[in-house]
Image (cartoon, rainbow, N blue to C red; front, top):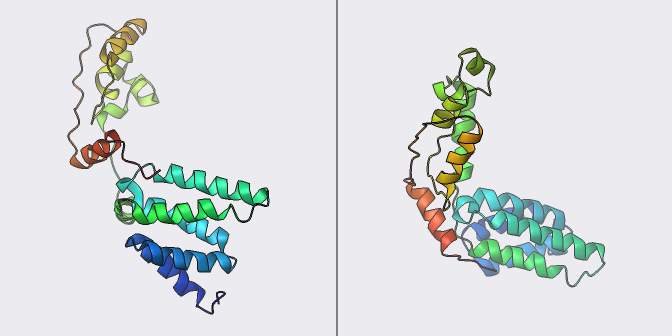
Amino acid sequence: MTKKGYDFYEVASAFQKCIRRGLEEDALYWGIELYESGYKDYCWKRMVIMSSEDVGLGEPSVIVQMMALKESFYYLNGMKDYSAQKLPFTQAIVLLSRCRKSRYIDHAITVNWHKHDTEMKAFQDWVFDPHTRRGKAMGRGEDFFYKESAKIANANKLAGEEELEQVAMRVEGVYGITREDEPVKDSAYQVIKRKNDDNLTLF
């Protein structure tokens, strides 16, 4: 039971569901109830999990912010500043409540772990480059690597990157290789990139 006589599991469920639904005041209430009942470590564990499970690609950088807040909390706890340690704890709850949400990662776990248990995939040919035993046995060298194995999708290259790659190839003794990388085309990636480019932040 918690400090006010609630069932612990029901409070824990309410805490996560309120964050998931963006009910900030309710999330704070249930978070404080857990905090005051001695479940600080549990709250941080759940908030780290929620950063991937309920926020995920909706706000890709939130996991970094969450870990920084968690570290701040335990630093202040170590300094015995028990009043100030409520600051990062409260900020973490508000941050998660206000974040753009995506449960894609949680669904990806369910689907892809099941696929891994039930399927056997074959390697694509470009896997066998000079960095593998089979690729070496096939006589593949750095020219194959640069033409096939170094190909990238959703390419977002920096200015001068292609010219630098040409210099790198010459250093490796590779000449006359041209490769068409795939430009950004995934709509989900574009949305994430646009959000990052807009520099939208809750801090």
